[in-house]
Length: 254
Length: 249
Picture 1 (cartoon, rainbow over the protein chains, first blue to last red):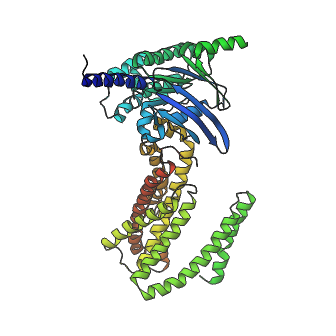
Picture 2 (picture 1 turned 90 degrees about the vertical axis):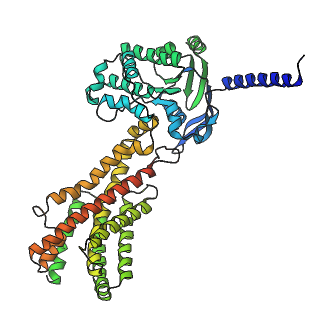
Picture 3 (picture 1 turned 30 degrees about the vertical axis):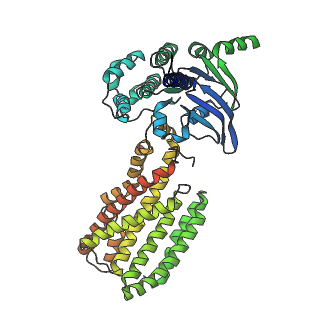
């Protein structure tokens, strides 16, 4: 027979499991009715969507539809005029900005490498996290990104645009973000290198459980990489759901 | 110099006005106002200084120095319109520059706290610091606009605003200090600066005038360095808001 104490324990355990489940079910990132106005012009007009841990979301839409602005707000480079962004159920505005930005990495379309050498850029994340540089980790990433190991000794201006973009991506990965926002990072790469970078991104998602949101104008890339599609139109979400449904719907329309 | 000769020198300002008008530089109004202000202000200060030198009062001397700092701060902050707390920053930096530089000169016994000494010397310190502060504001505004993306990319890596602004701050300090460093290099070769010229014209032997000029060169280097560092490190913060976002200027 169960004593009342035992029953209490069982109930408590059950509740704990439920609670864990609730936590698991909670979205990692959620935008609720996010609006952004700049100089009186609406840029984002009530964007709402949820991102679960481990998602790979292709963000699409014509230029000016609000893709980059959405990323900027998620990364707290800008505050929304209205609405809230929740990261791990907490309003992003309540986080220390540096903490949030380290957890939500953002790689720009335009690359910017600082200092003079590639080594400086790749050891910088460790410096930031107050850790000793892990050269094995750097080498592994360089291999994955199809870059020669001796590239670290090179000066920034000796690299091609595509190589610089890959270094910038690795620099962001070394900070070990939980979410990675990628703004057309393969735009300046050729097909071969695009595939390599896509593999690197997929590896981050599958093996390190990094949640990925990537902006791309390339439908084929979205088809290859994304699990979900977020389609923006004039600052509004016009589609958010599974990739397969999106492409089926698109085919039907044609 | 006769009064008529002085009036005739105004033709040089007219030349500047003509050039500005002819080339559509658009500086005519500012040139006109500036030259009228120079005449009125200098005439007034001539009378005031005669009285102040004669009275030789500590409090009044200090008050005049403070007024100088306030006016200079107001002028310098115009170069940084739109920057938060600009007047406060200018005033505090110029005051610090004056206190440290003039304080050192007093401490070393190079000058005495007498109106006839500290007012002209203070004027030079504040004037040069004002130009340096203006250069800093201008350069910071320009660079934060031009290099917005660079700063934001750094912020995205989880860097604090100070670290993200460091290259801009360093470039700005260089920009603002170079004129002073360059002018020190050419002292005596290209230019015989104001104080020395004044002393020589007043009849002092050039060798004695040189001593003062060397002091002035060192003093101004110190003053400009203090101003550029303080204004740069105080002003960069105004470009960010409480969420460590780069403000729109």
